[in-house]
Length: 251
Image: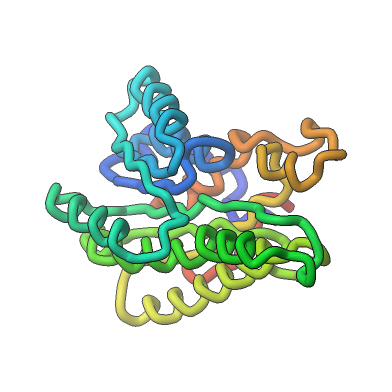
């Protein structure tokens, strides 16, 4: 059963007066969620390392009449906190509050046995998929606190809830994502109005899914655009009671 109430659909003003940051907004789920947020009235901050692809998303939002988005090139492979702190200082200086933070960026890494996984791939996957989540959220906490009722959505995975052979660092990073969500939710539950939940998209027709399952017909899975209402619901005030929840976008 879906966590979204039966019959609920986002209105064109669902996220009006909200600022939402989406990581990995250049393609796949991140791109679809960013566009959906803009269509629901949000000011979207687009982050990713492919500036050309981000510019294409920016142009799509503007051409559809959405609020002018922010374009923030950010390489989550950077291991020190300086770029994250500098970004937060810049946004604070601009007087922004962040009402929604969607952690969607991720890398798949090597699909092989742990004993055969290279240290370089292991480190990259853990850095991008979980350490950068910690660094960025930590830096943005003052901006999230500025919002009346901020929502953080962490993109999880089925292999982060039950281990599966040959998913290596990716699965471990998603188990860490779930643990991070639970710890942060427990900390914020009695000290803040910030909500945090994890969302497993399930099988979706994205570039990462096609790389992980090259023999799978892509059209057997839904397009990212078919599932974006789940993210909009979690970012909206309609889901105010959801906090610390482990959720599935499908099934």
